[in-house]
Image (cartoon, rainbow, N blue to C red; front, top):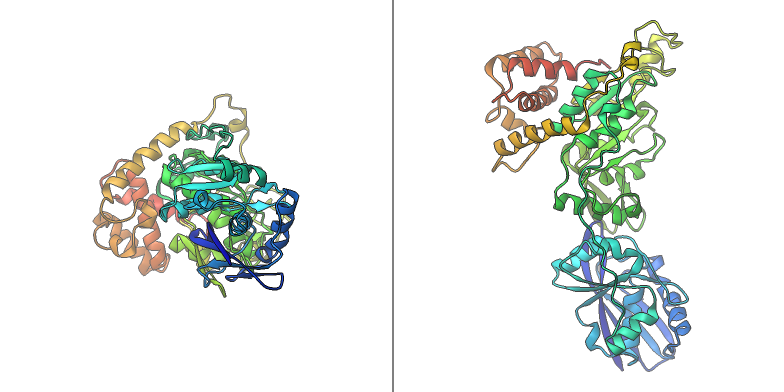
Length: 506
């Protein structure tokens, strides 16, 4: 009887678990058993591994082969275990020595000719391996760029099974070309200077970036809603290294790694189409649970254009992550929690035809159609929106101006200064943005000035705002106070925050 083992990683969401791949080759009728809750793709690994071995000149054992993936209780999915199974099998068959495969994580899918194909989730897998004490990993060459972000590990990129076997047998391998992954600052290819007019919307965007407040932009087509939304990440502070790694790990797991630079410090922006499904928005899947758009926008902006056109229930599914900053998906294989701390930007036309603006444009919609159209945005969702701005058509004078508006770089400086004030104020409290201040703290430690609180209580008594609305206005007031360098929100700050929240009645 021959027994060997290697290491790999199983992912349940972003949480990785070290998996010990054990292979036992015993006398008996030729057969292959795979244990450890594999899914369909993993169960098919036998045929991929066998074809790859034979096509690389290795012999397949004509005996009873048992492969165990432990811990056995952990569900395992995907083809990333192929290389680990193959190496353990060859070691059990005494084709390679066992010394070199100790404390090495093997990740990758095998093609039938022995090539090693890329897989999803390499970065979170390596992060889990590092936490478990593993310092060496063999990964597909196609995943080398993201794997190189783990500077504290020895990353060995391999593109073919033959090269892995040569390294394990001789100790020699080609030196991988080092990838210089310098962290990149904010990307200013999009600039707020391109936006003509719309001072109120520009101010709301600045407040949103300062405090992490959610925003609704309503206006006819061509008023700049999409331009403004796409430029909000350019006025947000650069991500720190930990945040950037977290964002990259989510994109790696989702298989969208190629759509974003792995070393970008710019806040991500994700713009799902308005026909997207609930699973695509919040994440899910029957077997391998993948993150949705709200998790891909973690630490950045989730922009949904034509929001009233979204299928019923899709927007309302965002209510949990808007409050908690994360999304938990329950499946029979277990519960998976993805990060989802994003700034939500909704954009909508004022009516079905899009021409209703209050300026005498030829709108063909009845008042009932207008109410029904905007009524698709549910009350509970709208109660979570901090800023509501109506954009009027850009005037001729604004379009004719040759001087550019204020740049993203200038706005970002104010946002960074305001956030620094908030960070210092919140030291020891466990949050960093004004939008994260708990309601109880707004009633005690972080109350606006007395006149401002009296104004809010009057609005609450007259039922013009809800209790949640009061707290939302107070949080926006804190962001305005930070931008204005006020020690606490003044009556003017709170009144301005109230106007920005109630500027559009739905």
